[in-house]
View (cartoon, rainbow, N blue to C red):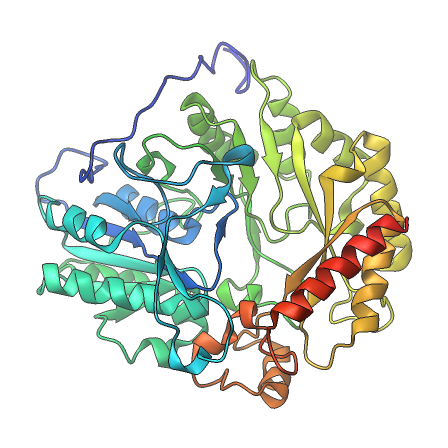
Length: 474
């Protein structure tokens, strides 16, 4: 029997095509005509800026796959994916990334002083409306996800559209927004507000009750397996080997979104990866919050197996890797497997006064040295530096930028978003001149909610120039 990654088990990829608009297809685990139908919707982004960096609604896809394995028929409408052959879409850039279609919108009154254009990103409203209207048979339940607290207007607009088309179909909203802002989410007309994962906290029973049924037992790997086959012609795919994060950083909401830290088996990750590889995908993005922890569980076997593929792939880490876990063995395995986009979590250059306790100065240098020794180039590596924290001064940010530049690594500002439930949120409420506790719109990192005066083009250009000058000095 061939090894999981051998050429015998991975044939050449077929040339997949997107369906014709307005087709949305039901996918079933069996042929029963009595199975409930669940439509998952990834709604529009409403923001001042948006760019696709291997984005997929992993939480929604996990919910749909769990429901399918439990006997439901599932379908997907992703407003942030091209989906149909006829859909106008901006040209993709590096490795499947690129801009979204954009529709200008009036700026919400809370944000009327922000000197930027507010927009809806994704498919045109009428395109989505017509596609939903043509879906047959109609769903028994609609799941609408939300990836950011401050993107809730897109989810609310979608909720109202679904209600208009199917007045009697129950609607559930889930994801980051109702998990971190449940009271605010409850003010809209959703039938279910799912706080936390589908498989926990009574959510599983509530969803099946809304469809008039009794909840079956949860399937194995509930919350891990993703319904990636719902994308007909994927250009990239996520890899999810773990959920949660054991660290308790003061600015991060990971523990509130998923308590604990659980890893998948290598076999489970490989099976999902292999299906996407067979579908022609060659760009994969790790979605783990703590990718490098306990690497022998699944990551190292996975990376070693990738080296046996008949065609090379590219791996990307849009979520910052923990530098202290970049051992020589891990770096060599990542390099051989095709890691192309490397992002590190530097966050601050002050190792004595950090909002976390997971990185020291020697660990930073050792991790960077291990990357270079494995063969990575400096131009492929970026270091995230937190910007816009409460009480932060410029000197602290510049010190971190200089530290990254001294290693030949590009410093990149990661704008702070105050998230409810995190230790820093209360301080953010105190220092911000915006009502960030009242309306999640004001938690938007694009407006620099904890920086005195907020966002300005002049300050943005000044920071761009300072970072460029910092890199040029080394």
